[in-house]
Image 1 (cartoon, rainbow, N blue to C red):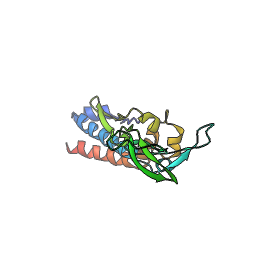
Image 2 (cartoon, rainbow, N blue to C red):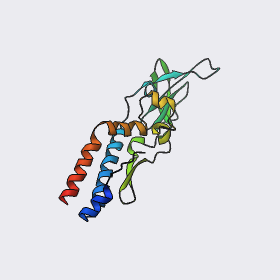
Image 3 (tube, rainbow, N blue to C red):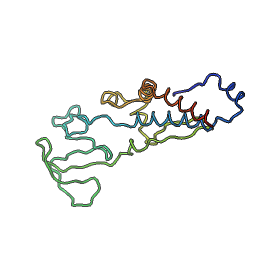
Image 4 (cartoon, rainbow, N blue to C red):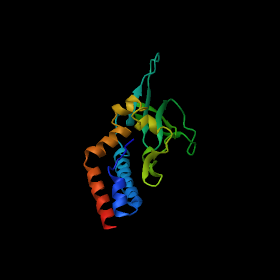
Length: 183
């Protein structure tokens, strides 16, 4: 969590006798938008997004599979017969990596990248959240699966550190002072 502390805020309020709550809210919303922008970007596609053969323990032959972003896992079933168009999870007959089979898939994606939004918390705070059930395994510093980190997925801490290191906080704070000063 990123916490912003403004030192001397009570003195500023007393001296100028002005409600600065809307200006503080705008400041924290700006910071939240920067964090959301940083965390919601997808890393480049990896081997997991291209057909590849996976060998299960004890199996002589592997299964050709891959993950399609926005859809879910896809795989080839060798020697399977198509049941015709329109059946969920069934695809066309084709060849991938010299393996002929029926492409099948399971639609499991919850559209992770489209689930990011900002919620107000109280009068001046904002929180960046993701509604996908598996978001913490992709983006949480505490719960991220190792393979997601290895494939370039940013954690919440990575996004916050990037915003802090970008100088954007100083820029947003300056905008806060100007807005507040100009009333």
